[in-house]
Structure formats: structure tokens, C-alpha cells
Amino acid sequence: MTNTAPRRSDLWAVTTADVTAPEALELLRDYYYDVANSYYRLHLGREGTPEELETGLAGSPSDDLAAPTGLFLLGRHDGTAHSCAGLRRYDATTVELTRVFVRPALRGTGGGAALLAAVDEAARSMGADRIILDTRLDLIEARTLYLRNGYQEIPAYNNGPYAQVWYGKDLTVLAPQSS
Image (cartoon, rainbow, N blue to C red; front, side, top):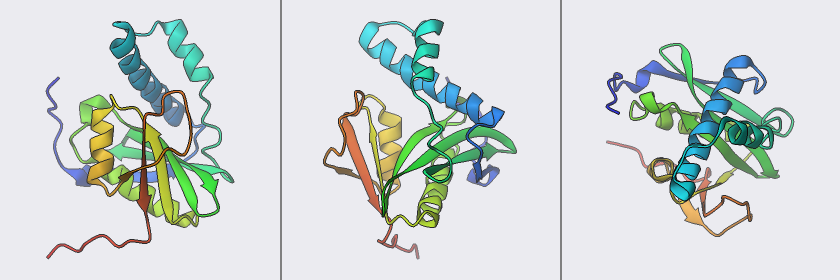
């Protein structure tokens, strides 16, 4: 699919949101369907059935992405919600990043970078000095996004069924200034 959306990152605005709001739930469903179908295509050579996808979605709640255990971010492109990310408290100084998603039609428009910049600020607002995450090896676009935004591969911190690679970002290190 060719992306014809404008490549202007200034069309993106990211804010905290209620993870139970209708637009948040719609994005979380789209996120789940996207990553689950990627897995089904890779490992089973087919899309997931509606029953499989809905059962998986129901077994993957996001209610911990709200105070006091976390927070949820929505990214709006030209005013409409098209991306999301969640943070959950891992320990006193670390948060875990999860549910990172930009709708496929808007990938490459700066939404992922805008989302991760807001994630950094949100993590700091939660008192964190480190962000960690796990992902799958086949999610190449996501892995590239993390590496471009200061994440580095770290040792495994969990044994989730789909965790194949782990990343971390130290928020106490200042980014190099452009001249």
C-alpha cells in the first residue's frame, strides 16, 4: 500500500486519554488485530478468525494503563485519533511501554516519533528514569522505530509468550543537540 498522507509531523498531537474511551478502545482493537494477524500470517499462513481475534483481545486487557498503575496516550493526526501507546509502572523508577500503534495508512508521517516523544515526557511525569519494552522479532517497523528513538536492546526482563527481543531507554541521558 502506498502512503499518500502528508509527511508533516506537525499534523500530529499526542495527549493522555482515558483508556476506556470509545476512540481508545477502537485503536486498541485495531492494534490487537494488526499484531495478531501479523503473527497468524507468519506462523499459520492465514488471517486470524474473528473468534480468535476477539478471544485474544478479551484476554489482553489494557485497564492497567490508567492511574495509578499507568497511563494511555492517543495520537491525533489532523484532529483524528490514529495512534496510541500505553505505559505501566514496572518498578519505582521504570515504566513498561506497550500497545504502541500507528494506523498503517499513516505510518511514515512522523506519528511514531511524535508518539515516542510524548511517551518520554509521560514516563518522566510518572517519576520514571527508564522505559522498557518487549516485542516480537517480526515487527520490524516497530523495532526500527524504537532504535531510531534512543532505545537499545537489553537482556530479557520477562518471559512473555510473544516476547522475543527487549529494549530499554535511559531517560536521564540527554539527547545530542543538533547544530
